Length: 237
Image 1 (cartoon, rainbow, N blue to C red):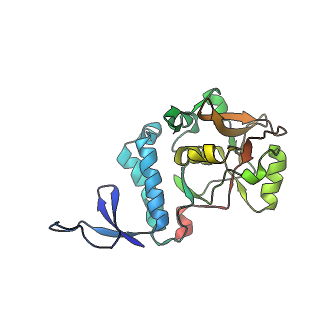
Image 2 (tube, rainbow, N blue to C red):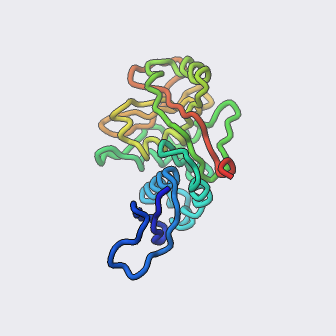
Image 3 (tube, one colour):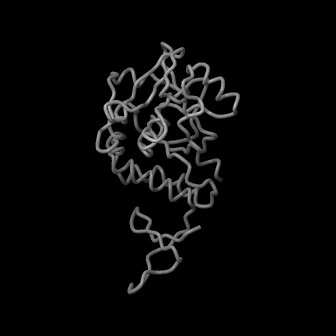
């Protein structure tokens, strides 16, 4: 655990657990785990990127929706390899790719909004109770690169991993855009449209791009993203 000074909605670290010099008094100090600090950092990022506007609520109201989950993480040992994911009921995915960027190049898509909205979770998947939840140990799936989506899905299942959904892939592109440069683009096999396509995110024109591939297509630059678990607030109680 580390001690943090709370200033409004921002937590400021005090590595030695003490007060800064030449201050007459300390603000309220709270204990925060590595996971809660990481989740707070990710929340700050999406607020700065305008997610409250997408949700059509104030920034303060948006933050308050994440507070129970971040608070529940204060005694967690999950570490920093997590993703804070808002559900599509809170922020619709259609406009989120434009809020990603790499080297100031904004993400884009050529798909109409109705196509993006049509990519829905498969196999009876229901996200943990929202409006926010965590993805644990997300990965772009480099070990499943150059595999047809249907083949990769069977491999992911056999490895007891979970394929990422569209919303979770957008969270990777938002929080870790460098993964598109350092690792690879990726398919999101946890979501699929009615015609069988699966959403994908890769680099195009030096920017993140949201597109789709057919389930029997193979691409040398696309992994198949996965995680090891998902956690909602109730699982930390």
